[in-house]
Image (cartoon, rainbow over all chains, first blue to last red; front, side):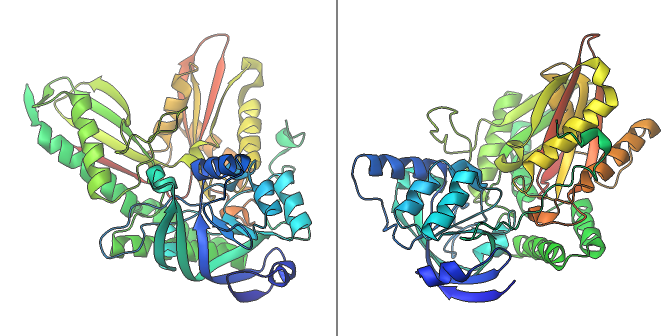
Length: 190
Length: 279
């Protein structure tokens, strides 16, 4: 496990060297999108329209921030559960998306896309939205303002703390639940 | 008949919504500290360090603990010898939620299930009202996040499956959920009742303090047994491995039909935000 300070855009070399368990402090621009924004982005792509930001080398953060109180760029801003975006993610990687940030498991399709397109899935600490918000220096809505918390925002982040969960080599960080240790009643996994 | 002013209810509910989202209960913070001490893995210890720092920051800055400030779930006990003056109870409670989420800069997460259109003010809240003896109005408010709620399940077991079947379902549910509900989790287990009532038992169980002990020694022993099995899974904080998968497991039971053994598993993330007020 290594520790890196990286800046956006992430190069293919940056992405290829990351392995699951690495700690990354990320600085630069990332884009927020969650359920509703993904649906809109995919609909735009289906119609042959441009997505609201250049996907090539981009990083998407799955977050719906709380409203910004006066004097702050953004409210609380931790990750949401990533698996709801699994259905959209491989296509975005095929169009150049470098990485996603969220929490929780990804499906086989996303893991395959990370390997095929040299992408990375980062985890941020769920439920630490006030803490993570401190690393967000600016936030600007770039699309779908009407979606409120689900609008696409460009975030300027500084030393945003991330863990590599799934890397481009097929490795994953999450613990495998030990059903046998949890009692024989459960060993068959039913 | 004792009168309670509508505005007092509105203000109390609004304050509960704001406070619940900024201040974690003491029992939850104590559980974080104990777990941080108890963990061997540096990664697990670091997660607890971050959660404690996050709690400090939320208190100091006024930012909510988590961006998902939840749907507001209210359990209300209205004393038979009191009434709310100046508005109907459900309207007044709703106004309180609206005020709290607006003035507290909390996220509005309530939406239509199919069009996904956001209602814009985090209402309607989920409100359960019981009428009870007395002249007080008791309101328990929970800010329930979507990520952990999505990992919750209801099932109708066969009576023959019994306690072993209950344990098996709960352990497998937690294993399947893995890192998704923001572990370390808290589990509310509703056993019995009907298809609709078991989850209410489960959710009410989540209102209990982590460090309490069930008054029935047999259920207390069952809670400990199942908690130990869940923690043996080794999922750990954020699913990164460790001893602490679950901070507390609370069982609530109700009588059920001869043919049934309803079971509800309500999963709560580590950010267990709830408040209680008596007016």
